[in-house]
Length: 376
Ligand code: SAH
Image (cartoon, rainbow, N blue to C red):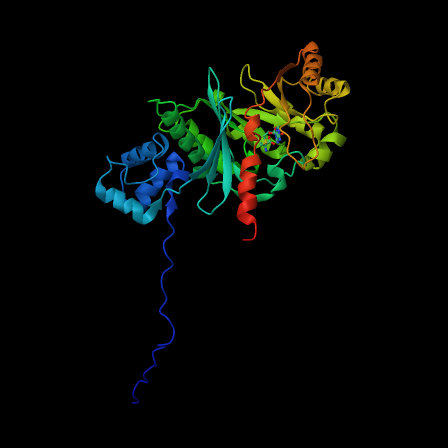
């Protein structure tokens, strides 16, 4: 019998080290998924999920340590397996009209912005859904950035929590949720980040969370036709469409998406959209001087919307130096509105909020992104 040969130990090779466990981003989980995470990963009972969820989404907690009614042991367990990804307020700009524009920095050093617009009867927040945008509309500042990445559901919701905190402090309010309305008209194309948008909406509408009513949330899209159908089937919030033109030629010139889904395809999706009783689709129309603001445009627009329950928001253009478009004057905007009104198309000229602070989406974050990307 021969002696077994001793195998030399591979002393020079490092021992395999398990990859560090990825922490679960708990604020991005729906209520159901959070319950699953707690039971499967931490062996906790379902009511703990309700407690944690309320801390995250009713109070907008930013650390486990502040969740004082959770046991110390559970908080420690959470820290081992989970994290609350920070969204840091980086800059704010206040307009004389009360609008406040917040720039937030994501953990990976990206910039997004949210715009707070208080009015007598409501406090509205304009929310971002992506860093940058892939849609490349030629009049839009965010469009010039290209798409950097999607925001997570947690990052979408964190904008709402952060601004609720700001408003509570600034206006000395006790209420946990001073914001009353949300519009998804910030940076990015919401329907291009549909799964995260859906989770964020479910959180924002949940009773154990911020509890926004579906009547007080509007999602605006550039016109991603197949997604409009899904949006109608899978959510119950309001729809706005950025039309911004009265002919395909015009629209394709400023909105590349129109080359894929033209006005006819877009309006067809709108006609099929499941509207709740009494609801209308909002059509946004950014008035660009000498480009889409003629009488003929107004007449074509009214024809396009003839058989759709529609409301038109005429938006004064917030000029972006270098993009080559100008704002339509007030008088022309009013004449345009009157043509629609005569044809019984409800049209409103939006007040230009925060004009003195470059209130249009992307104008502030763009500077941050440009700075972040500039060679140092
Ligand atoms: N991607 C979505 C939401 C973000 S844009 C969408 O296209 O609807 C939100 C609205 O702001 C759109 O109607 C867009 O046409 C408009 N917009 C973009 N840049 C603007 C600017 N500089 N001034 C005024 N409105 C602008």
